[in-house]
Length: 435
Image 1: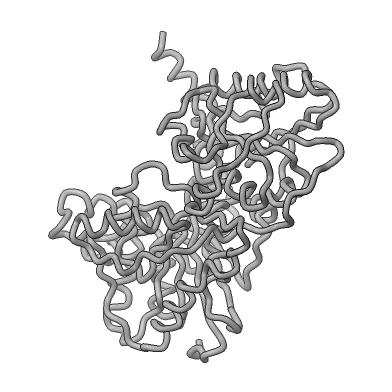
Image 2: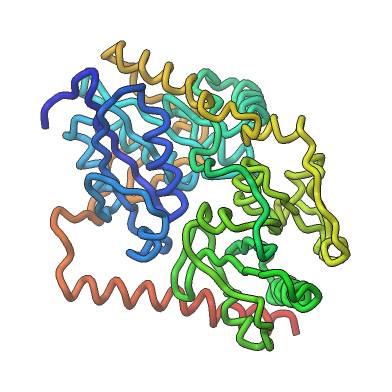
């Protein structure tokens, strides 16, 4: 592969779910230096949440190439490929494993790619754990001023280099500013794992249906992330589609899929528990509500929106409440509703351009090493078939060619069994345990 020129960038994005692929691919385009001709190669990490063809199409992000790989196969490819930028759009443990694996793969290279990672949305849990698992990348992207301050405090608090923390914004914000629609349309943005219990999810669904009955002049939409059997970043044990089959749904109530931006194009009120869709909605100045019906709790993620002015209950919404966001809070969340969104990625572009201009870069240096975390790091690496030094373990799964028909059938059957266990067997066992 020929070396890149100053105006031609080769970018690799490794993602482990549909939402992280969307974040990674869009981020790659946002942070690439201006006027660059980008060649984007996508790699989908093989696992339970590997997106289906339908999910990839719904995300709507295109790449010059896209293929499914194991972690070891990705590392083998990156050992030889001449990329300029590598974006790791993965869960924290996988990021840490790839950082160590890439460090081993590139140990004899004078010039290595710039490595970037971050979060797909709101960071409301496992802040220290997730951040330290991402430490070692050249840029750790923070989606808001608030996150940048928190990330820096965590790194400095453990004595780790915090210079990688770079403030940006969510890469998928955009769309036209809000205008009223006819009919007035209420959208509930569902989440795969929040809330988790069948009781709570049934409650939210019944309240949404009740709102539709109370307001027959409104169109009420339940925006779903995935179809039964598909997995996203989080596991969904109680799909709303199946719960809805138990109800008599009014004519003005519908279940919808599709690109969130297209749904927001016709939304007058966005309601959710804690979905990142709330930030997309606020960016476009669409009236937005984070529900308090189940409490304001860390486990739900809606605690992140304390101070936003957008917390409300279904009772309040049924009575006609219209939320008014706090402008100062919005400004700190990277929502950029004030029109500053186009400059939100300037700092990242500048840093990457500087790193690319330097040519040689120091080896990747994660905070976690066999010295700093001897009881934690080896287990993380072993789950991705890597030894403590980042080298592939003997017998690590890898594939240099496309899997044959038999292997594809076995893989589909294994995934189907896993999903059946998650959505059917696990809830039954949990209910039995509660007896």
